[in-house]
Length: 616
Image (cartoon, rainbow, N blue to C red):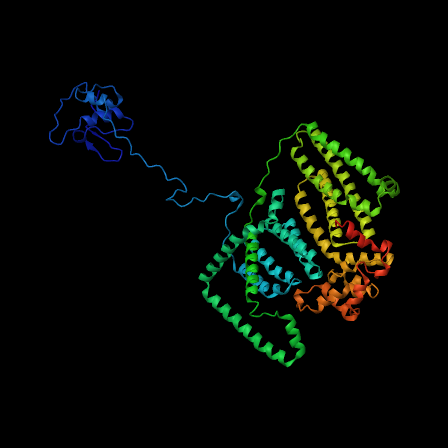
């Protein structure tokens, strides 16, 4: 066996003599390392030289365990030196402890939120500022075409932000956006407040859906109000954009401010001169420019902030919308075929039995029903309309729960689902027709009111929903949530455009021409939209019905942008034919529009309806 060299190469590249530092420690030789540590010389005694033995092994051989060890090293090698245990580490502080700040955990919708967009670009900031200024100037005097004027720069801000983020305009997004803007035309055309309020709520919902682009049931339901979630992030996002632009272009900001100040000064000076030189120009200028006073300062400031925050929220949502479609509803556990279908089959049989009697009424056999029940048209109509309306709503709930638990494992199961639920939808459509027929009978007897036309319109929309459900069963339910949302917006738009107050007035005027009975106490509270129909009444009923509207129009000083087309048309009619009857004459007509001595029989229909039963 050849003898090993006296020096071993260290992994670090530095060699040490074997007599000075003992044997080097190759990796994986723990026993050799312990022996070399025991054989190390102390600091006050020189090492004792060992004679070389022919059978002695090199340190490398000792590492393999083949060579015998010396007497002094053997006990140490057999019992290695115990090592000190690692230092005990203190446990981490409890989250939210008394000495630690509270730990912010991600919210339930954190996974639905995309990364924050880059700071708002200048085009978005300019459109947002225009929205805020127009809100402060135009929205303080009422509602009219000013809502459309304010909505245009807000929509531009959202469009600029979406383009900057790389989002594309899709057909459904365009449909919702156009529908939301069209709903804002209702206040510009109609004077009645209740259709206007309904149109504003629907416009907000469709605008929010246009910004989010939702398609599932949770996405459509939550996305319709999801714009509220972007109020805080929108303000922070806009502030970042302003701060970044201000730091990088202070010179251009100063130039823009100076230019705007000079332009305003020129407009004020020359506009004042021209207004003082020509009365017609002064009148035109006074109508066009909003009247802003110091007294209205807090109100105008509030409207400025509302427009600013709303436009920022819309633009921020367009740039990085929350993905509400990520919210999923856990599907229900499928039930057995008979356990699921048998209750619905029984319900279908009940619907069919009820509809059999309704078809008799719809086909003109009412006399047989009256002989059996003893009810006249009005009593029969008002007896069940609300019950049928609730039955329609509950049927929607039954269909939703049935789809949740319906078996879908095989083609036979899917066919059963379509057959049972399709039959239920068709029968419900007949119930809807029956409810509308009952309302028609009641209106023919007692006249049309705002609430009656509202619930009839709602019943019509519910019928449209059932038609969409039937179409989804045939063509697939992919577009059903969005189709129902669009149908709701279209129903509200149509309801506002037909002018409900005008329809109510028209029906009551026709009823007066046929029967000679009319409720002037109710009709005089209608809006200016009813003036063209009420203008056809003879005197003194015409003046008594229009006295309140004429007084409100003459006392109104609303500017052009806060005046609806219905108010303008009513003002023209009353200017050509003003009210001529005094209050005493109207009091002498009584409640239902005829003189006190003439109220007999059928002419007291409204009076009897109010005293005995008036659910509408």
